[in-house]
Image (tube, rainbow, N blue to C red; front, side, top):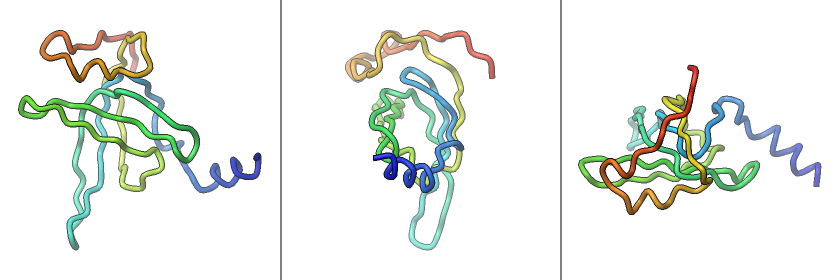
Length: 117
């Protein structure tokens, strides 16, 4: 069992990803490949959940774009992640914030925790 963890640690470098949790607002720079072209696009949103462990760890980010909710599920091990910045820390009591999908407007706000950049 320890051999599997050792190999995952060697292959997976998650030290480039800062620590964040559910409720935090992040800006994720994501590499998009279209044919021969390659570009970097920013995706700013709230982290709804973090699931999995080790190599299988992933997180869900939700933003509102033109009045429509957009969610992306991103694995921590994705090579398309260029950079992640934590904009603000959220103060929430739950690990999974799926209830935010049903809320709109001011109800969907997340309280801000004390955070030093």
